[in-house]
Image (cartoon, rainbow, N blue to C red):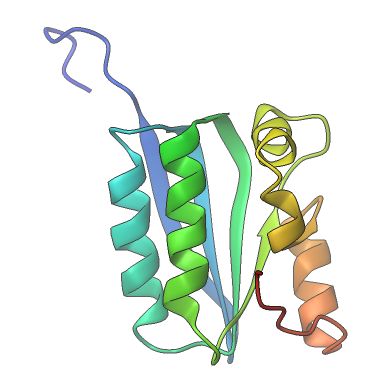
Length: 132
């Protein structure tokens, strides 16, 4: 961030592939109308290789606005039938609260940590569900 500019919304994104058919997108900072398009683009790139499983780790997200919620839904839509999507979201966090209030949490398999999501996806107990 340029210190000469007014305070800007910040987001950081990274991706890992801890297993052959698993991609994990790590997101931190604020997901709002300025940063959500970056997440959507990043998810599209992560899904280009068509992993069987995708975990979106939002445990480091400090703010999740409606545009950020839309980006998560867009990621799930981009995943299509071929990729199972799960969220890692910290209990009692601002991100979890936004998902609960918007009633979008029920559209995602979710776990308190990326490690727990990986374990569940690895044992194939998490089936792809379609939002209504």
